[in-house]
Image 1 (cartoon, one colour):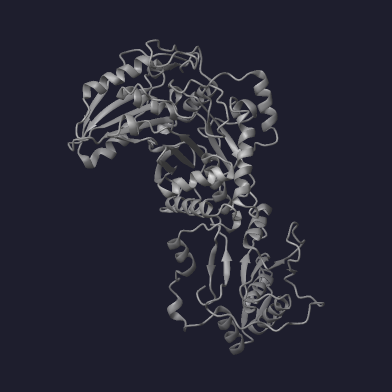
Image 2 (image 1 turned 30 degrees about the vertical axis):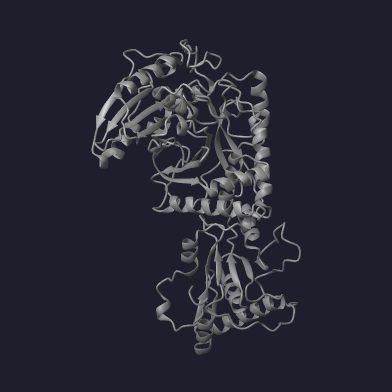
Length: 620
């Protein structure tokens, strides 16, 4: 790693290698030995030259040599006896010349990105210039994260292109006033403060609830082959993002991180956890290549009843407290942290760029994200913000998601963002989540059985017809052997519907049914439909925080519950037992019988979106 106090890379004096690995480097080296992460620690920069005159290959080769002379950390290897970075043996890597057909370029670049480094031999960087015959050669550079970070990408490309006017970007992902601390060994005082800070905060998070997450997705903090869904914000949406962040008194990073945690909340994660990469560069050090980041977790408990604006400010306050401890790796502050390539199953990185290449190299298209086709955990949201666009990539473990699920997650994120930029004062629970086409599919897609029923037929209508036609036939058999005939069940259903009507429950209302599978549950469900309302099933076996989230998010008009009444219910919410009561209020006239246009139920699944699945009596 370079010395942050060494001279500028545009001088002839090159910084020396350090005597030992820094805190983040040491942790990364340990995971390399234990987990064999493949390309998960590779960082990639790809530049396509689109101008009328292709660059001179000799000039680019000279630029690579100049880069290595000024940043010898790229020519290092890890001596495991230290462990310590030492100069690699053998010649410096030159600019390799490769040729392929245009339609084979992506495969070639992927192979180059994933080709492993030998940490014990070095060097820890390689370059290739690829010609495809279309007159637009591609410069491809890959470096190992042990000696490289996001800001290093700008430095590498500027050095190779011979851009001497490059000005380093802001080197932190947080409040504009935050001071980077540099890649140095934390003091005893800093380590103790970090231990106290994390003592009552850190718990190892489990795999989160996400749409399409497969049941066989094991070890959510292990490296694995990955794929990515890229997306971009530019023009009006990017301008509105900046304006909204400014109006809320937060940075763009803080707004986007709050949005990410809002998305996780709406998927059913009441306590979202996300690892974020924080810069540790010292002021004046951004022109040095090296590993100047430390990953720390951001833990929140968003309240679905509060506005997004309030939550974004909460996230800002939480980050401000976190920045005080950015020099100390979490493994130095908590006990029992196992080797891993990421602290949590989900992570976010954010980097702001100056956009220097638009002026200094306007004929170069740069991929600043550079996905290496591998991930360090279950999923990672990579954000790179420049003056005129924000490049983003949702990178995920390829074997952990059902086909199409990652693209849906990106769609949900963008739908949430549009809603927040329109009105950040909306409650988290009320923000729309599904894009229009997915919302239509969720609400109105048929299940293939509609043609078998006459138009206008409903579940309760068919049940009533059967009860009238065969009242003595067995309708349900409980697990304990209890049997109810259609006539008996119909009478119980009607009585329950009358109880709901007595509470003023009718068409358009949602009734939570927190009852275990039993005759009582069936009676409550059919009774709710008969009253014209829709039910929200609440499995009593779910975790208490999950049940509390669904009850709050659904904005129930009544709750049916067996056993103790849950705490924290809204004042005035009618709470009914599934069992008949001798002191029940007299029946109140019900509204009109439910039709196929009335919702039947609202269903929250394990990967549910915040706008849950709704079925109608004539469809479900």
